[in-house]
Image (cartoon, rainbow, N blue to C red; front, side, top):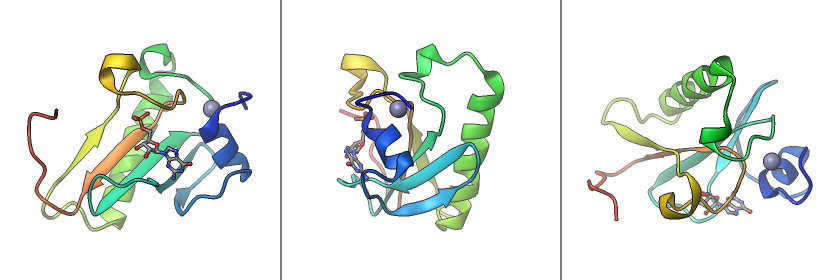
Length: 113
Ligand code: 5GP
Ligand code: ZN
C-alpha cells in the first residue's frame, strides 16, 4: 500500500466504496462521479502509479480480462461500452494508482474532449 494513495485506501477499506468485483489481485467499484449510467473503476491491489509504469504483462493482461468479466456482469456486452485508461496530466489522470474505467449504458461520443 502506498501512503496517501486514495485507491490504496479504498482497497484497504479506509474509504468506503461500492464494490462491483473483488478477487486476490483486483478490486472494482463504482465511480463516485459517473460519466455514464455504468461507470466502474477496476484497479490492481498492487500499487502502480500509472499505466506507463506497469512492468508485469500478466498484471495488465489480467486487468483487461477482469474488466471483460465485469462488463459482462454489468450487462454491457450486448450494446457495447468503452474502456479508458487516463495517463498523466494531459490524459486527465487525477488518481495515481492504475485504474481502468468501464463506461457504458448509453451511446458514447467519439472523439473524447
Ligand atoms: P482519472 O481521472 O484519474 O482517470 O479517474 C479517477 C476517477 O476516480 C474519477 O472518475 C473520479 O470520479 C473517481 N474518484 C475520485 N475519488 C473517488 C472516490 O473517493 N471514490 C470513488 N468511488 N471514485 C472516486
Ligand atoms: Zn495506490
